[in-house]
Image 1 (tube, rainbow, N blue to C red):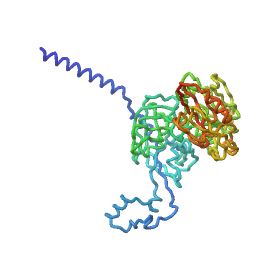
Image 2 (image 1 turned 30 degrees about the vertical axis):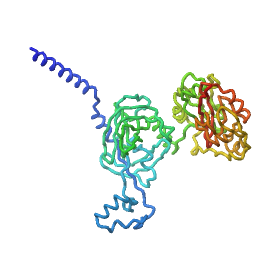
Image 3 (image 1 turned 120 degrees about the horizontal axis):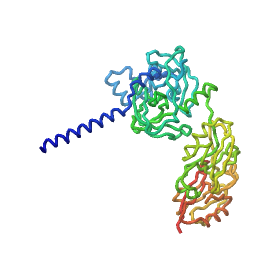
Length: 475
């Protein structure tokens, strides 16, 4: 009897597990129809660079490998890689992927796929290969628009709205990783609005879709078969996929496409500010209810923010109705505004909210900042303060180079809070405890009254770039 009961329990358990497996199988998406419909519009992109000079035999002290026996040639090729031969230079090399966005032959891909190319070739799903014309490229968003002449009825992808994506949503990529055409990988959206180093104007979509060399420029699809992103970058320590891939949102890409078609170039909105993240200590020092917003650390002279009344120390909380939760949200929002348009923002200033309206400028190609002058040119004035730093007045040269009128220069840093927060000789202190530092005497006066046991902010300019730091004094 006991054995019968055990069999019944075991059978019931197996049935339950089988039912659960069936439910899970039903819930998993089937991508077959999506791939069948979308893959004809996916293309492989290769480029050719014309050789600028013919490599000479024995370059860099190496022998001529062409005249060597195969065994020795293989050893030298593996151990001491040489520059490509003219024959290798002239052969088209498969670099990435792309997709057709219009029936008359417009193709979208990454800028880094076709950068520095003398000739660009597009291979279609039916194996036709043709040379493409570069209509325009935008290095800042890493996008390039190509045009091929292959009739007026080419297969095209469906364009979706990346703004509608949500973390956890299924997505799929089609591309040519390592030269394998029309490879399909799937995953989910890990996060949205990611900022990457040197990529401040693209709010990347982060996914766990397997992306490898050759996938660049390929489309990222949602379950409705719509392109919602362009696979652009991966995070890797090995050169291979590690579960972190990044795609350019399609909303951003289509804006770039329309501008390139209309003018051949892309313009972005610009405020002319240097901002930084508001962490817990800065929020406390500015008496904000929580860490949020973008702290204005520096304002470019005569820039849009300067003309619009924005001030150093303002914390931008909203821009054109969009909440600025993190500082990285601001460049994304400003970049989407057309230069010359008006924009409104809500800032926290002196513990109260203030609404400003200003005309947005055009992002310049080069945001260079003047360098510091000679620290030794100013007469020393040692201070005796709780920070453990000695400061001097700003020289006329420094005021002119940095276009500032207030502040003191750090001459020496001894033991104390100043050293602990990383102050260096040559740093310029312009604000202390949310008060402007006009001279050495004002610095001394403010330093003597600094509160204890709470975060205190200090604005520092180092090598032309301003930022806020915080410290805490004990009793």
